[in-house]
Image (cartoon, rainbow, N blue to C red; front, side, top):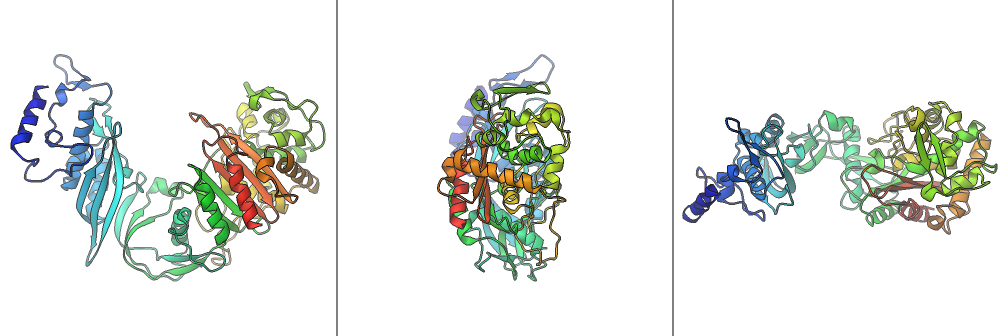
Length: 555
């Protein structure tokens, strides 16, 4: 503790300056001269050592360790001492590359970093800088945060390195670059010719980025000069598009018309904003045209690119498989016991309910898990995968909608995992676009690949399904979805929308999450929609009202 007192004494007699340079703007975290000089580290609690060995720091990080490690990094970054700033992280090589590029490639200068009040080991900070490229310059301001961790070897407090420390829009491996953009801007229009902007429709930010990347050159625009996020290998694999942060000189945009309906898009935006983590998609079953897409979080496009277990909405596909194979019929008796064991796993219904002497339609409408799990022993491991691919056009990674998408995944599985996949758990992964397409396939009677930009614009080939459901299967599936919308778990949300309608609810359990993800997929007339509310609970209560509102708005 003696070193702390000596540093505090210095604070009274000399300014907070080291080597003639201010280290960091003092914010709510209370960085001061103590932090700059790093005093008292050896005297902190949690430091242990043996004679003749280097001290190893253990235990929770102290407030002084967090202050010191944060200030060391922010001060060095602010002063342009890249190597020193990188050394204050737990991945110096990666940190040095990105911090060097911050000035060399992104052309950022006059950087000011203002620390906020620490929340545990996480320290938020604001950044102000100037983007200066040749004769052009524009201000840049944003917020970010860092988290202090203990080094694996000696326990020294360091900044846990991720590219998002430098800018929150960066994924690991991404870079910041200022210069003449390789991709011209685009003006995106809705189906009626109105201009689509992220200011008007916040959910469309990532969609507009994707449209620019795909059609910027094809639409005949001319590139401008801008600061942008250039995606690295990992982000490219995740189908993330480059992102413009600051425009220094305007290019000449090309024009791209989309299939989005402005009234439906506005309704979708309003609906998802009422939930913390909601996403939804609406499309036209007869053509596949996407009419709306919205996410309550405006960063990652979960609606198009999410990869989530769809829960019981998957029973639409499973039911079609069982009927196709002659293992069930809508109005014939079908078992729905309280539990069913398969592959060593014991599967349950919600609250262990059972339906004695019930039918497949009754089990579908009430979302009985065991009614579907009980048929696993009669199926081949690849039956569900083939049904999803061949009838519903899913899980082949070949959709070309005009922007990046995840096209669903129904992997071949065995034993208990195969049984779990029948009810949308196991390895099955979907997003609202996929599940809206499932409802649309039932309504249309055949798969139409969803699209946001007409294939006539760039002569691309849309994905197709290799076969259709039989008329018998299709009729029964529509009957079950209609019954669910009128009398089953979807009835409350779908009230007043009949008679030309159908729906299916779902709840998907997620490890470490108290409430399941709530799913809902439905159609009404020539409109289909699906939605998910993560950690929301039962789909009929959470995603159901979102989807039902879109069906009312667009029909």
